[in-house]
Length: 421
Image (cartoon, rainbow, N blue to C red; front, side):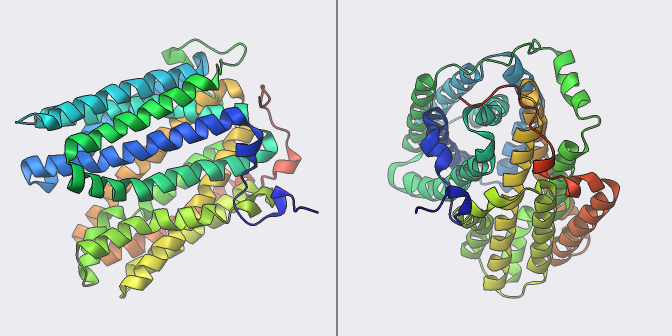
């Protein structure tokens, strides 16, 4: 007798097999995300080539932050008020045009730096508008028992793009140049739009509110009296602000006696760990204590980051980051499963918008926190203290929000209003 997917250790592919519509969504987004990761690297390389300034490269994040924070909330309200497939088509089509402008600018004899910054901000803003709709669609297209598997597959695509995209970008820039590299993103987004065109409508839930500031505020109001959902935001914020060491990678690579190659290994290690964990994620279907699973994962993340700061050998530092990435993947799977399980369809977009701002804003604050501590003491102290503070924050949260760790999926029915198609 063939073993059932829920009993396998390896990645559960049943959502791809059982839901053709979700398969279209996942495949199209994977191709589009891969192209976006290529563009991220190409933009950074072009800015540095034009300015020879690391500060100028850092300003890319600065120009991206405001549209990300503002439009993430707007995108959440849009996703609850309008057809979610239509939102993704419009956003991906806009990004396609922006990538085309980047290609034309790179082809010109005198590429304009301000054009690169404006296009980067535009891409960040349209991504923020699209992401809540993307997250909100999964629960409409797969069965509730497949939520953990679908979350694992979403993370698989994300981490695969984060690993393969930068590597492809380096090769493409070297062999074909920047204009052709930007055109690869145009092609990838074309595939994404065509996939969405075949998906069919994903209309808002019955009785969904119109897009308005009141609707955005209602999204925050929904969190009142919802400690389990609030806990998913808070615990991730703790992990990202105190335990995100990416700003320390160059300095720690130098401390370990390495150069750019070591830096590359450190930067890729978390995504590699997350990707490896997705391939062994079949066990997640057997877990019902979702909050406790997230807590254990974030404690593991904090411990791995603290040990990373203490590492004296490259192999140990890389290994710690691989473990941290795997733990983060587990946290992502169960946080998304909690969202899909406990958030009604008419609120998924707005809560997804809040989650996107939290997910993207937390690491930015983490970069600031780790950089300040590293300046006052050292990069090693910054990483280790950040990991320990992450653990302490999770312990405090467990005391203040005990219901988060007690939450058992089997004891509460899903409040969703629309079944999977």
